[in-house]
Amino acid sequence: VLNPVMSPVSAYIALTMAGDGAQGNTHQEFLNVLSPDEDMTAVSESMMDILPQKTDYLEVSLSNSAWVDDKFTVNDEWAGQINSYYDAEVYQMDVASEKAMKAMNNWISDSTHELIKEMIAQPFDAEIGLDKQANFKVSAEQVGSYKIQLTLNRDANGNINGGSIELIAQ
Image (cartoon, rainbow, N blue to C red; front, side, top):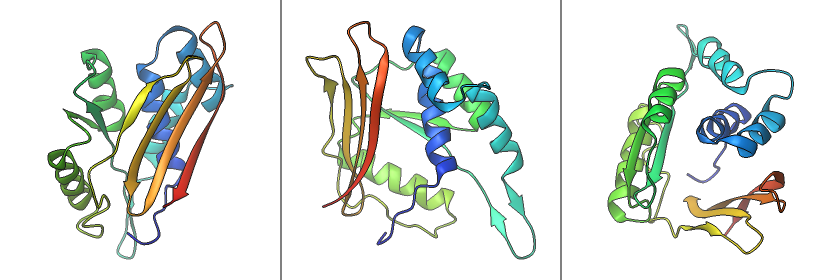
């Protein structure tokens, strides 16, 4: 894919799915950032209901999935929630493997009716962890020659106090 595009709707729903899995202060911070005046899950559910359209000349569809590294345990309640609210399946495997790359590309191809046949050109070089300041950082080569990096900064109490999402040309 030469010109990757992440729509604000896609980013919002992806962050809502992550926020739905968070607990305590982290969950509250997702709510504060995504929907200070409304429930983020309800907003995403509304988008899932309203946006898909199909006419003779236009088709707008939303496809969602969650890919979880096998180092983590998937909470069954969360998996059921994102399946129910976002029609998303949860896939768990070594996300940095060739097998995962092929599975994700197949899912993308199927979900886009083969309009996008390959989005991930090589297995992820995933770096997932907590640094000394308890900041959460996820980096992955994700779309062609671009790298997506999500960083959530936490204060000493574990509250998210900022963050960034970067799309970096390689």
